[in-house]
Every structure is written in structure tokens, then in C-alpha cells.
Image 1 (cartoon, rainbow, N blue to C red):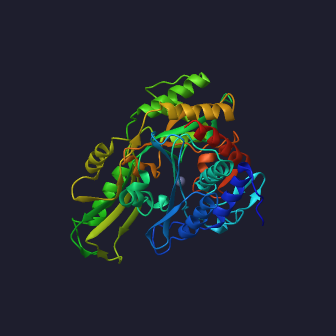
Image 2 (image 1 turned 135 degrees about the horizontal axis):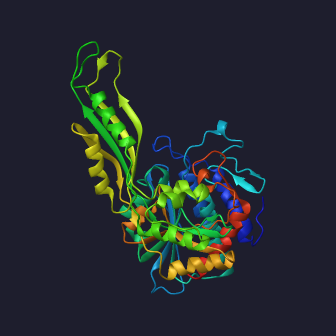
Image 3 (image 1 turned 90 degrees about the vertical axis):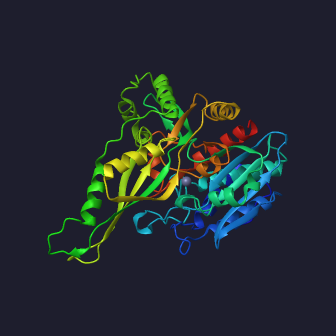
Length: 439
Ligand SMILES: [Zn+2]
């Protein structure tokens, strides 16, 4: 299809998001089977180069590609703003979907596909925005660093972490970063819309537990069984009730929502306040405490052989600054004779909800959706922001999306029939334009 001379960003955002969804960038967590990131990076680089920007592709391993480029701003003496999105997606099982997950189908006002909200939508907003600005000669107030990464969905080693460790020059002068997962609207019980800005995220602590014991014959008396010891530890951890620990971000979120809705918030019982929030309760509930969910077990090879080792993997998520405390609790719950080893250990992150950039977000939302407000929140999952935070960059999740009140948005992340409202994409470009203009 021929491109018109100057497409409008609110049209282009849909086309670009659709193109990106059609490039299958499934990240299996294994370099041998992860695919598409190179093709997606080349697509993004082409979109940037076409309007006169100078993107560069970085490969951390064959096919594992990220793209970066700098859009020079009006005031080079100010710190740069990093705008980032990941290009990879989690796997999708086509037979479970009502449309093909990589078809980029549009129906009922939604663009369907794996990555529609996580996060090819925001990638497309960034591309549509900077293409529009370059074409119309608009200059950002300060340098923008645009970064599209590989491997976010499997811990960022081949994307954001590779970039931070091996190409720190890309981040020269960057003081703040904006990416996922925030900026989407949620409708409060009194119909007021708030846009949640991510100012904190929990740590990722993937822990492997190993028990060793005496191997033996399954028919004999045996008092040193690795499987028994391991499963006792796993059960103790899985059943543990972690205490509520309110971080500044979560407290501010609950206080703001309470103020906006008039619903009393009892600080001694935040679980109750969160339960009244509707679908977002799942997301917020997990930010009140550390969590530890056993997810994998591995032991034995024959029914009548007692194995010498047994292993389990626990998906732990620690509150910012609480990862050591979490480990101590788990060691106590596991008891003696269990070795701990981290598959991934990335501490949580938290910044304050204040300053000029936060004001620019609030102003952009006020203008794009009059009457709406911004509130801070903590993400229970993880993003590339943790990698950028290690460079001392202040990180925010702000990918604006105005959503229908009844849409269970958080269920769409990694979900079946992942989709984004077309109106949300258009809203996002408009809000980002207002935000970046004020950044
Ligand atoms: Zn994501």
C-alpha cells in the first residue's frame, strides 16, 4: 500500500502497531528458539531513518536485537529523557485465541494480537510521535533517547541489561526514563477516571531450592529422602502468609483513591481497601507484601529409586528494599538441608511521585481527558526499568491509554485475545505528544 505524504499520527499509530504485531517476536527465553526481534528492530530502524533520525541496531546474540537513537532537543544542557519499549512478546497458543495472535486483526474497535498491550502499542505510539515531530520540524524540549529492546519478557539479559552493561554511551546524560507499565486508565467505583503512573516495581527473585539426601531403594526403610525434605520446604513456603508492608507508593495510591472516591481507607487493613478496587485489585494486592509462589518441581527418574537430589523453583517478588528480608524468611521456612541459588535476582525499585516530569504527566492527562487525574502505583511484575535504574536513572511507567470502564485490562497482559482499543492508541499518541512537549 502506498503511503500518503504526511499521515496523521493517530492513523499511523494503528498501522505501526499492527505491523509490529505481525512480526512474531516470541521470546521463549531460549536463544535457539526466540525469534523475530531482529526483523522487528529492522522495521523500527527503518521507520526512524525514514524521517531523518539515525537509529543503530545492537545485537547481543544472533537475532537478539535492540534499536537506539537520539532525537536532539532544544536545550542540550538539560538531561536527556529515555523513552523505551520492548519488542519481544510472550508466547501465544493460536488454538486458544478467537483470532490469530500474530494476524493483527481489527474488529469491534480493537486491534487484536500478542503484544497489543504488552507492549507494541507503546512502541507504535513512540514511533508515530517522533515521526510526526520530525516531519513537521518540531523539536523536543530536551534530548530524547529512544530505545526499543529485545528480551524484556525473559529478564532483559539480551536487551536492556546488555545495553546498560555494554553500551552505556547510549544513556549518556539520561536523567529520567518512561516506559511500561503505567499510564492506563482505571475507572473508580464513582466513575472518576484515574491514570496510574508506575513509580515503583517489585523485585524479581527467582529462587532454586535443592535438597540432597541419601539415594536408595524405594522398598527399604529410609530416613534421608531428598524429595521429602524438599517438598516440606516447598509446602511451608507456599502456605506462608507474608505480612502487609506499606511502601510510600502504595500508601499514596490508596490515600489518593480514598480521597477521590470518599471511600474510607483504613491503613491497618489495606487489603480491605484494595478489594474495593475492582479488576485492578489483583495488581495492587500483590504490592502490599512480598510473595513466593512455588512454580516448578523436579526429582527422580524411577518409581523404586530414591533420588539423591530434588529441586524446586520459587517465583519470589520482593518489595523494594526487602529482598534480603525475604530471603531470611524463606530460609527459616525451608529449614535445614536446603540449598538456595538464584536464577535471577533483580532488586525492586521505587521513586517518588513528584517533580517537573510528574507534573508534565498530570498536565498531559488533564488536557487529553479533562477531569481525570494521575496517581502513583507499584507494579507487582518487572520491566526493563530495573536495568535502567542501575544507572541512577529515575524510571516511570507512563504509556497512556484511555480504557473502557468495564475492560479487565490487567487480564490482557500475557492473556488470551490480547487487544487494545483503537481509540486508546489514538488517545495515547495525543497524550504522549502533550507530555513530551512539556518534558
Ligand atoms: Zn511488557
